[in-house]
Length: 469
Ligand code: GLY
Ligand code: MN
Ligand code: MN
Image (cartoon, rainbow, N blue to C red):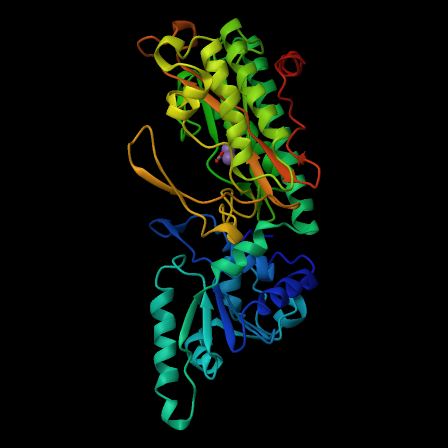
């Protein structure tokens, strides 16, 4: 079945989410949720179609050119592509408005060609219009146009909505805590991605043992093969396969560089499965055997990840795993000689001055869900007024911070510390051009977290054993 066709998983699940959202819209509220547009790639070819995450969360419907209108009373109208035999011969089957109510559990469905005619009627006599702000180019002016039609009827007694609200707020809060269905899909996505990493590691060692020319794209091909053969629709983001020094480029992509015996390979890749992302990074020796300096830095990153995992539990703050990581890395950087005590002082000084930033310049995680960098407030909403000002030691700028989010069971985040060592004055040469990141996906539980991506090992001995096989 082509990817752009309806993917329907239990209409009841999506109906329940719409009911929960409706209850948040307030009296007289109405929400408008478009799916994503098709995007041209070049000439008359489009990029692989990907639905809008908010729209899919509320519908389970993956066709393009579709809209939801949901009232505070819980009535949903879907606009979707009309049946059209000629277009369906070229582009694939369409669900169509007649079949949609039974298939998707919506109250009414109309052809999308009716959207401009029907929206003023659906907005008339409502008080507040909710739509996702700053996510769909041109949506604001379309809403304006529909409201102009409503206003033209006020002399006949129609009431025009007078409040616009950002639908991302309530939807982001809903999406931040995953339900059982979402957690099930995410576990499966992470399992598939873990198998793909294993396959890439083993391929690297096997091809090098056979004396073959191994390129980054060879390992990328193994990842894709494993994703697709287990039913993943696509990678959740552009896969990084970085050989040697390329691992120090944070947003490197799988390219054509040779993978050489003695180098490390960093792979950051995860599949998307039924609308949900996974996001795994492993760093391994191309030939299956860590060198001494590689193992030293690898074990430091792993220890920092273990500290972050231990800090991830319900009731802790989103920033706690990052702070735990930084503490271990800062001490380790002093211990291995990447930072000079005589220049940067104690571990507390390294943390306060952010001297570690020379080697660790990203944060330790992000929310994970339908989007790889998923929606959700990183500030604790109940404490958003508690601002603190501080001077950033590196930029000198004043930074306003707020208490970070308190973790709850069902939130999903990545835990991904790393170290990136470029050549430089005073940098021990045996560490040059070494980039290491270890990234796992964690479901927050009451007592800790469930690492759903650990089917691929992280311990250096286990990686070496896997690559001997
Ligand atoms: N792969 C994207 C990230 O790790 O954030
Ligand atoms: Mn990540
Ligand atoms: Mn990643």
